[in-house]
Structures are given as C-alpha cells and as structure tokens.
Image (cartoon, rainbow, N blue to C red; front, side):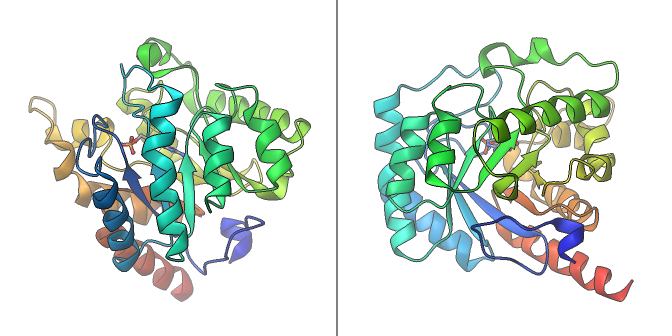
Amino acid sequence: MSTLRGRVAGLPEWDRCAVMGVVNVTPDSFSDGGRWFDRDAAIKRGLDLVAGGADLVDVGGESTRPGATRVDEDEELRRVIPVVRDLAAEGVVVSVDTMRASVAERALAAGAVLVNDVSGGLADPAMVPVVAAAEVPFVVMHWRGFSEDMNSRAVYGDVVAEVLAELRSRLDAVVAGGITPERIVLDPGLGFAKQAEHDLALVAHLRELRSLGRPLLVAASRKRFLGRVLAGAEGSPPPARERDAATAAVSAIAAREGAWAVRVHEVRPTADAVRVARAIEAAA
Ligand code: PMM
C-alpha cells in the first residue's frame, strides 16, 4: 500500500490517499476568494474541513490564479500566521501554501508541519535553505513562472515528458539544497502554465509521474480545466463553486492511480471518493 502512494517523513501515514483541505485567506482566489478572508471565518473553515474529513489543512495568503499580482510580505504574514497558529493549536495538521521563505519560517514556528510552495523553491532563493534547516516536508510543484504571465508559458510538445523532466530537475535541485528526498512531495501543478488539454493529459498519466519515486499531490479542485470539460464544446463553464462533483471524480481517479494526497476546497465529496477508491483497491 505504501509502495503505491509512498510515505512522507515527518507526517502521519494514512492508509489511503490523504485529503488536504484548502483555506485561502485571500480576497481574490478564483475558487473561493473572499469567503475566508476574515481570520475567524478562516479558522472556523479549517476546523469544518477537518470535521468533514480533511486529514490536513493547507493555509495560503496569496492568490495564484492566472493574472494575479503578488501580495506583499507583511500582508501575507498578517493573513496566514494567526490562522496557522490557531488551527495548529487545535491539533490540525497544517500546511502553509507560500512562495516566501519568511512566511514559511514564521508559519513553521506557529505550528505548520509542511511547506507547500507552488514554485518549488524557485520564487525565493531562501526557501530551500529554510525548509532544509527546519527538516520539514516540502511540496515541490511544477512551475514555470509567476501568475502574471504564466498562460504564455503553457506551451508543450509532450506535456507529460516535459513536466516529468522539469519536476525531476527541481527534485534534484532541492535535494542538492539539503532537503532530504524522504520529505519531498511532487505535484504536477494543474492549471499552472497549462491549458485544459495539458491538465487532462497529466491526470491521465499520473502513474508516469510516480516514476520519479516520490509521493504525488494532485490539486485539481475547481480548476479551469474542469470548467472547460463541464461546459462542453459550445457552453460556458459553470462557476468554480459548481465544480465539486467534477473535483471528486478527479480525486477518485488520482487515489486509484496512487496519488499520496489530493488538495480540495470542499472536502466531503472527496473524502467519500478516496474512501471508495481505497475499498476498491482492497478488493482488487
Ligand atoms: N493550486 C493552487 C494553490 N496552491 N498548491 C499545490 N501544491 N498545487 C496546486 O495545484 C495549487 C496549490 C491554486 O488554487 P486555489 O488558489 O484556488 O486554491
């Protein structure tokens, strides 16, 4: 079982694909922007996600939707740290979603146990040293550049081969930077410098990404490619909040393909999906 999904040193081991619930403490995330911007609402949301079946909660203070401009460091700290502190104090396994080493460091001091960096350490040269020194797990996502212009980088000949090669080189770089391989999780970065057809191909080929030898995090939740699929050839995509059933479908597939965890905004349907996938795996 753990050979299918892999194990991440420093985190609990779940006997199935884990469910990472998302709390975006932002006014502008595409999926849930503004809903948990207030500190108390964000903390309550994190606790509700755990009650609904989340194994860990990912707290972020910067929107990475295509075209988003960056939030400044003080504001990111102000958004994230109290939420991390309060959720960790409640016993929640907290991950911090940040591209800034300073935010990661402060979040770890406040009780976070995992750093999720969508840039895989590329945005801030201090990130890898901070994570290496803290000896905590690190999510390395496939990333080609900041959100302002990432759509222009969504150009691939063979998306699976290129994402695989680029992730392998990031894995080598962060290991060279002192993060032990046993603590590294890889993520194909659905929607980041990718068009819908690229995201679909990556989900279809998760097993090939597993060949990198590290656990995989899959974050399809409410993303544009699901909107495109649901819209059909002519229609317009449903709003982000109406993509949770589609998200759960990807969660079931990702779990079946050996993903270590799925990152979702609405945990209930996905918690059910990964449990069903686990039951089917046990019956195989
Ligand atoms: N996507 C978003 C934010 N954080 N983290 C990882 N590891 N992988 C992702 O694909 C990812 C992420 C963007 O979605 P959101 O802002 O709506 O949560």
